[in-house]
Amino acid sequence: MSEKFQMVAKTLQGLEEVLAEELKEIGAENIEVGCRSVSYYGTKETLYKSNFWLRTALRVLKPIYVFNARTIDEFYGNARKFDWTSVMELSHKFAVESVVNSELFPHSRYIALKLKDAIADQFRDRFGKRPFVDPKKPHITFHIHVNNDVCTVSLDSSGESLHRRGYRVAQDVAPINEVLAAGLIKLSGWNGDSVFIDPMCGSGTILIEAALIAYGIAPGIFRQHFGFENWLDFDEQLLQSIYNDDSRERDFEYLILGRDISKQAIASAMENIKESGLNKKIDLGVASIFDYNPPRVDKGIVITNPPYGERLKKEQIENFYKQLSDVFKNKYAGYDVWIISSNQEALRSFGLRPSKKINLLNGALECKYQRFSMYKGSLKSKQS
Image 1 (spheres, rainbow, N blue to C red):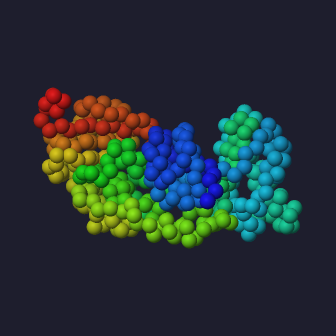
Image 2 (cartoon, rainbow, N blue to C red):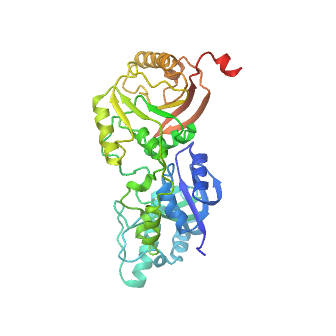
Image 3 (tube, rainbow, N blue to C red):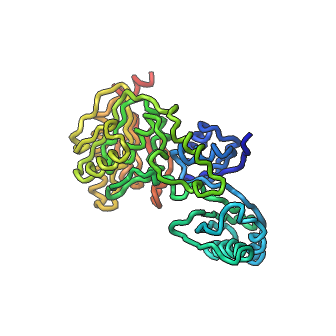
């Protein structure tokens, strides 16, 4: 029977519950939701599946050592007590990332430096040589998290952030993070059960994530490498079995449609979609949202990331959002329209009352993610 251990999956603020649901689907146990993270238990197979299948995880950590320290000397001394040769070799280049929430240790970079010293000094004492530190392309990455006097060292099983799927070869002016894009779709409740439209699709990230969900394709399928592949206990055969398992793939009978007024944006979207191998599964075209006529349906969904107004004047963006609401009212009967925006004034100009609001972050921008239900006929007849 495979050994079970704790893992922590990191995510974006507002996506924790979605990530917890994803973890249930891959068989994780003892799931606990935190702030921008979810902790859980499972086997090595769970760890590999986490990196390969989780759409809303940024990285997956494996805690390996917890100790207490109230001074830098105590931190260094206790860090030296762990057998670092159990998780890396002298030939491995390594890096340390740190997060410190403690008045005892105000400088997170110094904590990272002292952990590097503890690891390297132990190797020097045993082998007469220190392993190299390489923050750009390490074989092994350690994460040290200090909360008051509790210090937790974890192995980073992901390596490069999981939002870097590997399909994005071109990008628009303000591309949306792949993890956030998948999170928007998951939060909407859409699961491949209707027409999907992004009428302001930019470089196509939301469309690609929607297609991956609709066809049951793992987001990790495009990745060239995961951090755990450098670990001493890496199981190539297990990873290949997960990679080759197509039991979750399925057919999708509806359309996924992307439009944008910018020819350059659509060209970028085409490049990314081609790189993802989904070019036969997504319908792209150059069109203004004001001219485009969506398919008439009993049920459909729109998820889009319109301009926030950073490069437009206040009057322009508010007028744009007002016209946007008119388009959705007049052309999108039967659709649930989901919009993410950081421009609160523009959203107030939208002219429609949201049926759901969710607070999210897009990078450093605080955003509202809102649903507007475009009913056929009057709302009264819909509710009666």
